[in-house]
Image (cartoon, rainbow, N blue to C red; front, top):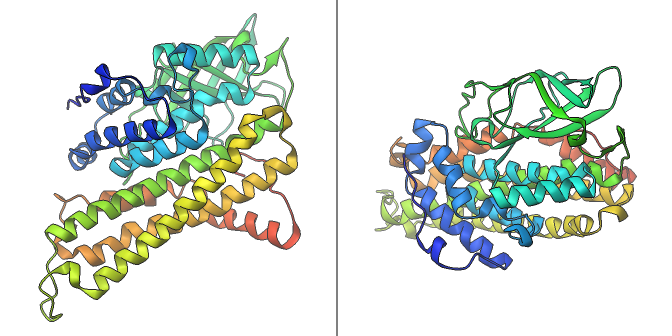
Length: 405
């Protein structure tokens, strides 16, 4: 397939405000929407889609302006992910994970490290992938002179073959010290496998990866100085930050499902023959359902935006983040994650009730929205998110920072 970006991207200035970037994301979504059903069915490696993200400059959103980046914050990044996900959940996920891994150097690295990574990423429009699935056995990291050597296997590696660089994570052999490092995705010993075969999010390149003696200089170990790591509370913001990516991914998919279904209902859905209405859009149950789903979606989006703004205050002053700050933020993220999950699953399922039986044809592809949400919402049990909120309300207990909380 071939995706051609609007030529206006090359002739007009790059976006400078948050609203401009969200508008650019909407333009990208419009391009993706034209053949989203066919691409989902084909399940091909999304090289063209990632190139679209590069051509549109969306990959540089969080990068420093002095090196060609957008200079935007996480609140804008979440909105951009939501906008892209309306058209294609897979590409929305790829972009959201890219933002997370692009930010990983700032999360745990020294100032010198993250300034270098962010500058290079913006200048070269790197696309990031990551091999950091915590449910698998830890990757083993050994020392070899001035190098670190990563060896192991991960079940999931979102971005894999379409990425320029990959974030690796492992544990130093004989210690409990975790190490993050960014390596070229074509590094010797890094092998991505074509075994992602799930019902949804088909274009995320989330298959397994073998890490067989991948070498990187000790100097690339994020946050290490003289082989010692000095932790900060800010280092633990990785979970609530990526969980908000998930939230906006789900809300974007739900929004896309509603928009697509409404277009179908207006143009193709037939009124029930015993209802007494000439148009489906006049059916009371159709009107009520769209009103109900839209109201719930808008409420979840408003909460998501509010929580993103709360989190941005922590990102703005990393050294000042306390355990209390971090814990309360995680509770708020857990609450909106639970709400977004319910809203997205409900929306992507119930649209068929008001679109009608003919909307279930494979040619319409309305099922992709539900398949995408159903697949990704199983990332971690939403019941544990509700538990975090409940324990905070009843006992004031802060969630313990883990890979999932």
